[in-house]
Image 1 (cartoon, rainbow, N blue to C red):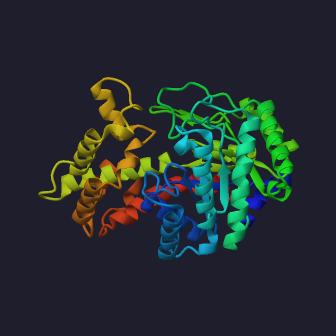
Image 2: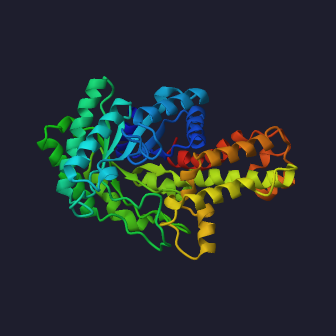
Image 3: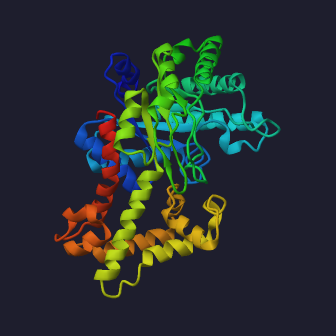
Amino acid sequence: MDALDELATARTAGRPIGITSVCSAHPVVLRAALRQGRDSGAPVLIEATCNQVNHLGGYTGMQPADFAAIAMRLADEEGCPRERLILGGDHLGPNPWRDRPADEAMEEAGKMVAAYVAAGFSKIHLDASMGCAGEPAALGDAATAERAVRLATIAEDAAREAGGPLPRYVIGTEVPPPGGADHALDTVPPTDPAAARETAEVHRRAFAQAGLGAAWERVIALVVQPGVEFGNHNVVRYDRPAARDLVAVLDGLPGLVFEAHSTDYQGAAPLAELVADGFAILKVGPELTFVLREALYALDAIASDLVAGYGERPLKAAMEALMLDRPGDWARHYQGVPEEQAVLRHYSLSDRIRYYWAAPEAAEAVDRLTAALSGRRVPLPLMWQHLPAAEQFAGDPLDPAGLLIWRVGESLKAYGAACGR
């Protein structure tokens, strides 16, 4: 747990470091993160969300123990020591059941938190900010903190019963919309400094009143909005002067750093500035599956040009048919005329196509692509045409899986550099 505990200490000592939070269940993304951890010696933080993975299966069909087992298996296969892997649970609270009365939703949330901790997840984001049936959409700090403490109590008990390390907690909920905004953005205001202070203080008092003073010492971060975001079409990058007053709040919060969500597409310089200013936990997800899709589509085009009988971009055609047949994961997020929606289905920065890669039709199309190109020599001009950054893969027998992992790893390198890892 030193990798999480040292974040605030390093900032106070004037040598800020960070950690990348990889928020994805895609095996290629996880392999890229674990391979980077293996090669760099840095810790690897992988997180699952309450909707994605929970005690009832979530939309992936996985319970926390299932997700943990996959992460550990991939770590072994990639040669990344298991002790370097940190598992986190994101937005753990009543959100998946918020259409139910609060007592019912919180009961399920408690079971979920217990399952996460029992499975070895040691970074727990307590998020009980959303209203349940008959309540306002967003709760105030006092109610949020009271419910967070209820979940922390369950987490503490589960950790002791499992005999594992006691959890490190993240509090606060002021985050961008999951997966990015649905519209173009100009600016995003940072969290009001007074609101950040109040959130931390209300939670501290609630932990103390519940007899969880020792657990409060393991609260490592406060989620705030640093003023970063991405929509379907554009990115709002970090503006240091605009966040100056918010950054100053950390001077009065010993032991804490900020956690920044939706840092995707920021680029190396803004990421480094975020870490330097105390946003030590950088969460990223859609960017990693976006560049994975970018590489897959490039290989699809290469195979169309190179392999007789492969067809005209059959992977892209398969994904289009799949998304049109099952529009639930994109239709309400992508506005515009049909032509605009068609572009967004494949190329939006929110990358909602990521929800479809596990479908049998998608897996079959990817397998066909991989089989078509495995061992083939891609001429350099053809690689330049479709994926110029990958020119080192030209001319030699191609390992498509290795190229995909490399491409995701290139994005993760910017995060590693910003975090000082």
